[in-house]
Length: 62
Image 1 (cartoon, rainbow, N blue to C red):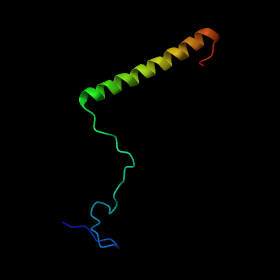
Image 2 (image 1 turned 120 degrees about the horizontal axis):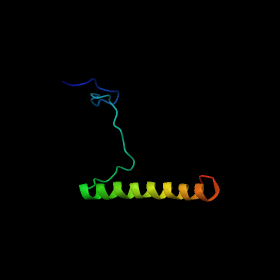
Image 3 (image 1 turned 120 degrees about the vertical axis):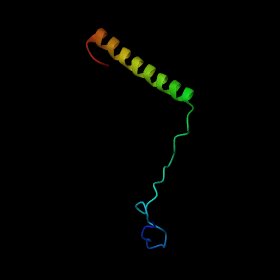
Image 4 (image 1 turned 90 degrees about the vertical axis):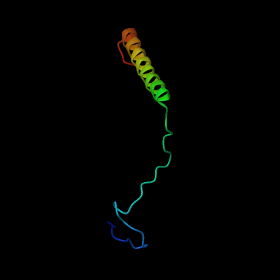
């Protein structure tokens, strides 16, 4: 089944709009994805530890 044609004569099935992604993420292998997730967890833990040390040192979270 064909959708309606837009003003420029192109088929508008599916909304008539194409979504352009400026910088699509490259496809990662499962191993690269795992490494990226682990690196994110490490960064989160480091941030949490710095906040805990700062709080213990002077009572603030910075």
